[in-house]
Image 1 (tube, rainbow, N blue to C red):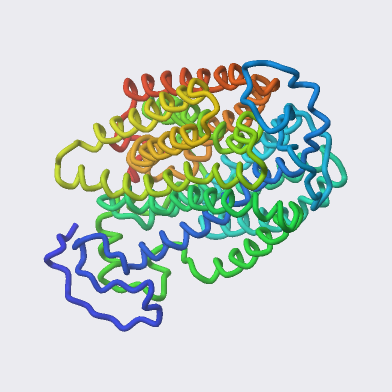
Image 2: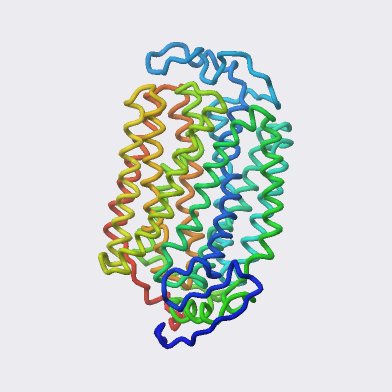
Length: 493
């Protein structure tokens, strides 16, 4: 491996100035480089995908007939006083801008979790195909299919709950291939000294997409109607997906606008030498690998709380704090902007701490994992005890989601350290296990909170906190940050 001082000083004219790099190799992150341009493109792509992932969470408040559930909340002092006794905002007749359905909280929880049932099914095939045939077609086709299906969601809801659940599951199937493909991408495009920062910046698009959708979604549902909400967001997503195919390239070698300097920098520093995995895999070695199990357990435990907040926070604000559709959507957004800023800041901080030798890589991964799981759990446990003060509740939720972003420099990027050659496939496997919580958590939360009381939600948050604590302990014991012998290029699959 050559060091940066021996690189020739090449200054190439590029037809793609946005993605061209003019910085000397190894000198700083190169924010005008191709790899950072790619991170920006992924940031927008994940913004688009997560806007689809949470759209039903905010729209369902406008889709449900609030008056049909008044008898379920008859009187408990364990509920917040509202302008009316109904769990949803019924203080004044609302103008219906779209069909309204008589769905119970259990039905809503089932519909919200049906996305994850489809999402789980394509994680492993997506990761496997990304490594074997390339991440670009896998990721692009998944995004486009999900966007097209979003346009069909209002029609599916009109046909019935079963059809809506099916569309949700199909959207999950389409999006299930995306993250395994993204992690395969970074094995080819991220220098180790910038890895945490690049991955976190790209992943931050998920939080920004959630923030924007929650901010705009409730207002859109109230003013234009919830069907228009899906048509507008789905249409914009389709346009971006078509554009995306022309903006990205499989690896540095195939990119027409990359400078020789940057190409050499990426390829010479990469821990992934040679191609990703072939059609055969060292499955037995993977099953026996403790660090992989540590990552898998951490994913499952952390995702339990994350998906509870992602899918049910607007419902909590509406049914417990009695905010209307627009208010619940608007006030559900600040936690995700905190998560967005935290992702970007955490990525920078993690790489700086390791680069300056202030922390070993493994120590940094464990520290950020512990803080990113324990702090959010402790904060949400306080929510049911502060009563009906929605400002304090939003502040606690915001701090919780901000701290949870620290896992982006912890276990979330750990696969790129442990087994870069098989990252796409392993991310598919581990994310499948982790996202079982995305399927179960909303349904469990819907059951525990079915009476819409503070004590019911207290159980939801206590369960999430206990699961997070177990995940931290397991990861601290078994987590590692060094490449495993069976994952090296010269090992026999």
